[in-house]
Image (cartoon, rainbow, N blue to C red; front, top):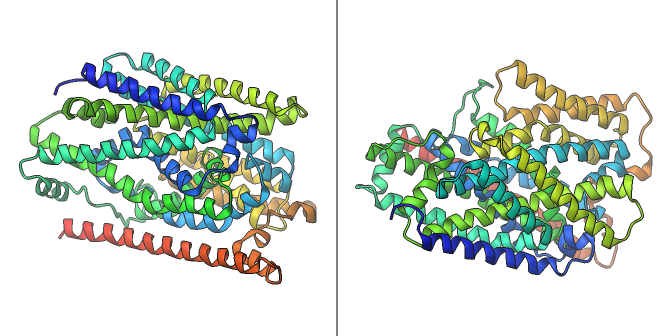
Length: 542
């Protein structure tokens, strides 16, 4: 086929309408902020895990990762090779702490530990960073719509913004998660369908792909260079990428809010376990599409579009069977709407929970806060729309999102690590470390030629070091500030020890053993993935 047919357009409209209807059905059961932001804490861990995967496989990945693969092969997979290790830290440390605290916004924990100034500053940084990144998330599906229809990108941004904001105001976290489950399977179907059609269009099939990939160095995913200016070296991925993902999944409200919506610690851990096992294969899948597209373009003598984000959408529209193209593009739209839904929902949660209910209207009813939450969602949708107009100048959209986060994530993670691990750190040190950590990242980025992945490591190291040293210049925190926050009281093993003589000791001990087994499994999986990449690279260069 050539182009987007009326049948495809019909499929697109019907699918998006169906997803919006499903989301609105969940919205009817919302009566309080807890329902809107956390789904009443009743959502099972497996659904949360698939929702996290769907967000990672959203329009950002669907259009950004193939461009990565087309341009550099599998080299950028090292950015994600660390995810199983990051999930181990989250499962062992952050999930027990956050769940035991019973909070809506994770920045509430910082107030308990360090006071209101640290909470306010951290929440404000999240709003700025996530608001900007959400603009990039909005730009991605608007670009797809522009490619499909021929309309200007600015017009499609406005159309997508109106759709996304309307859907988000009606839906809540329950709608986000359950619609995400649907999106994940549609997008994976689109990815697998793309691979099938691409490979069958090549005379030699998979043989052509592997021959071209090996000759072009596209399977060289592991770069052992110690030069810090090498953006995607293995060390940048392991060190910088590790801190990026611990911070992203552990201190970004848009991600951890899903985990907080689970009914128990074990369910929350299960949701992260799914991401720990599937995120690397998923990213490998989309990068491989880029490698196959490079083979296809080379064999057919085609000139790629100037914006590599358009590669896969153009192929879907021009090569997929009638109806299937509409379904895949619809999946991109709906997944983008779900990603926007979760981002706007978390931005609204922090706005209302950390600012409005504390400084403007502290004693209002649940109905009032629910209305305020929806109004905040509209505001952040407008904010993201304004930034989306400039997102096209940032390069590959998936890299743009991660780079925006790297300016803030490391320093924020350092603040949470001080709160959880250090008995001596206090409010003065936390604020000093947070500010100094961000300044250090900006200074290094401006003055030195260093991979942006190291920004997260720099932020963590400076934030923790300065925060602890400055804390020594003032009084130690009171004992009640440490209660239910310090890791000794919240870690699964310690909980089992403390409950050794209680009636439910066998159950708590079982949970601790299960947590350890899960972490060991993730570590083994990390070794397997790294080994397979090394074998593939060795074969390609042999």
